[in-house]
Length: 510
Image (tube, rainbow, N blue to C red; front, top):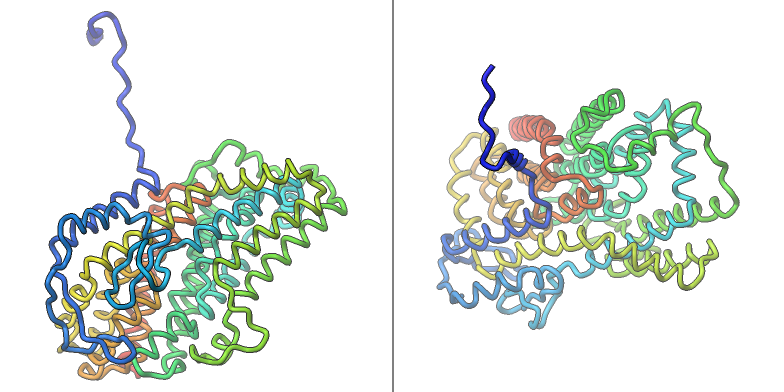
């Protein structure tokens, strides 16, 4: 047998470098550059707006590009800054850090993630959460599937009723260790949270921020189409739960089939699920800390739910007296105060508590920055004034088609729009006044257009890297974005087929 010649000097050839998928931050930088370059090719345009700010159909017109190369370079340069605390000027519509108007950036979400990191780190420092998760995993070691299904159904219910999405970022610190203790992997935890809540948002039945805004823009009652959306929610939630359970069982049986792999220490946590594992008892201090944690998360859910809109189905319903209507700034303050409270309950010293809070916030800087970069992409699109041009390009696509084809076309044309406009309320406000009147010409109820739009927005937000829920979630779970896409794509295909079937059937039957 011949032996290949050795390289000069007798040195072994260097091993070929293995390709590694870029981090979430790198992905967002690439997306930012791509969108910025595409804005040079897409002409600027605008619709005339009515008194409510909605675009008037047929009023699209080109507008002169008022941005010089210096302006565009400045937008690119300031994209992360605008993503954090950019302000939108009400007259020009431009976003910039030195303008006056409404906050456009994600400063609230950014601080919320850091506060969550501080709170979770302080809780783990007490040992209560580790021990509590271990005992829970031991008790549910034969019923892990029931736990997964139950959490997903609750998240999906919250998603379909009130748009439970960004709020899920606060649950990774609880769900990831629990799934690991039950013998699953980090991807199982991501599957429980992102598709769990996302499928509810996709099938928003009375979600005031999605279906409510879209129905109002389409000039139809929120209750129109609720039967179709309700059936969709039942079927698609069942399919999604079954998909995650199938993956979870496969990984638990054969950890080598995990798509996310395991970090150091992950496999050791699975010992809490063995029948013969020694489970330390919970002390009174541990129980007190766990009660505080449960109350904090329960209060968070209570504080953010728009109860009047969720219970009445009217997005404009006057809030009940007990509603708090909290947003991310107050939630950030809540978790910072809760971190201090847990530290006091656990009798941490001032030095230890301060150091733990800082360390926890530092650990969550990466997902917080990912959220900021994602928002910066939309700021570039806004300042380049190309969104209305994209909307105008789809007007001719959905006209002169059969009712079933029209409904499916509305779903399909809204997919790229959901990428460009991750905000469901912003997407609905811009797109529905254009798409809904087109339904009249196709003989399709406007409520079907609302359902198709909601499904398209929810489907895209399950995976696109410009949404804080997705890219921030995989970062919090320490799962590669490429691995998450490999996990999700079969489910995405199945959901797309089912949604097309539902909206086509709804267009024909109704």
